[in-house]
Length: 155
Image (cartoon, rainbow, N blue to C red):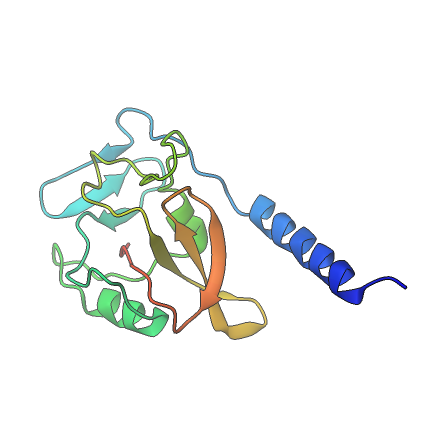
């Protein structure tokens, strides 16, 4: 008799692998990709996104909704801010940095911890979970929205 648990686990792992493959891969930033104007922001010349350079004062992180509130109330460089989508956040991953990272350009984003960062992307069909990027190794996964994670705001 075959185990349904084994088949279910195999199917789940297969779906997870497909999801990870479907997400965009990052790459090491070529020279000139990031400009740092000195106002606490980093401009990505490849994507056109503007990123918060330094992280907020919450070293332990926050829930998904608290991360959204934090970015929504951020008053950096007189701009409006939001939590990045998983696709946008993944563009910051530098896969040339070996684990345990942080897998990000340390010149543009100094003092970035090698840890999880929230995206604004909820898990399809399950609003109690959302996607994050792990800057230890650049991999993407999802977790409960109550999970504590860091956030880097974008505009």
